Length: 105
Image 1 (tube, one colour):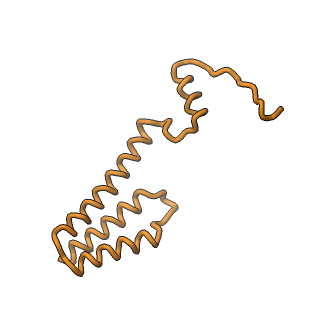
Image 2 (cartoon, one colour):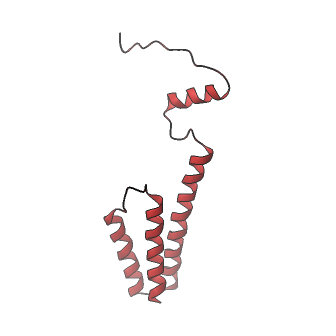
Image 3 (cartoon, rainbow, N blue to C red):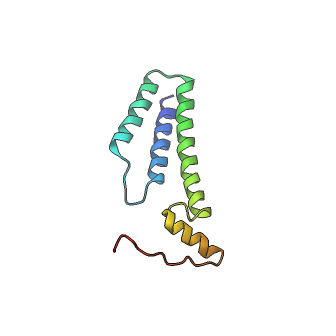
């Protein structure tokens, strides 16, 4: 029974690592929180605890996949509002007029 909990914990850590940039590590506080949750579930084993751990792994995997798909199919989602307007105008073949900069005067 303990191996299922260990596999669930490893799955959580794996998904957390995959969701971060390659140069970053998983926050130790988050890691310790998940570890304490899994250890408490292992101390009082229930079927619901295993389901919750598996659901957490599935949620983290789905969230990572959603972010990947949004980045792929909606390239404008991370732009600022003026950049998004300019990119949308360029997409349909228009150029935005140059607006006067009243702040510098």
